[in-house]
Length: 76
Image 1 (cartoon, rainbow, N blue to C red):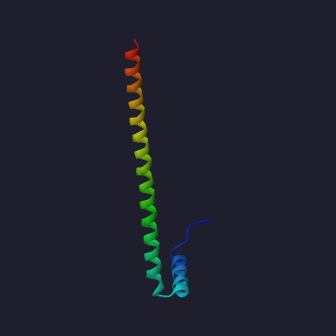
Image 2: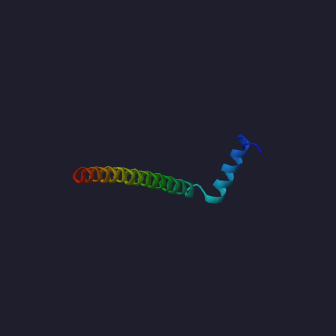
Image 3: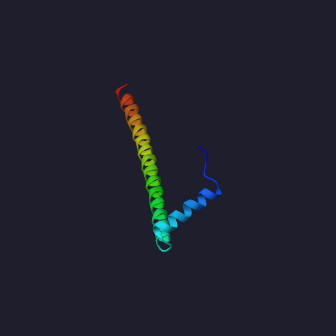
């Protein structure tokens, strides 16, 4: 199945205009835009949280390794 051509897109736009009306379409577009914006923000926040957890894990591992080295030095 191929992508719709120019006439098909025009027909789809006409049907949408008839279903929702001229005043409702900008409200729908605004809602869709804010939904996409919120989704992208949530994804970015999750990526930042994951990076922060990884960084704190690395710091904790280095700290444990340093403590273990100090303990070995004291025992010898």
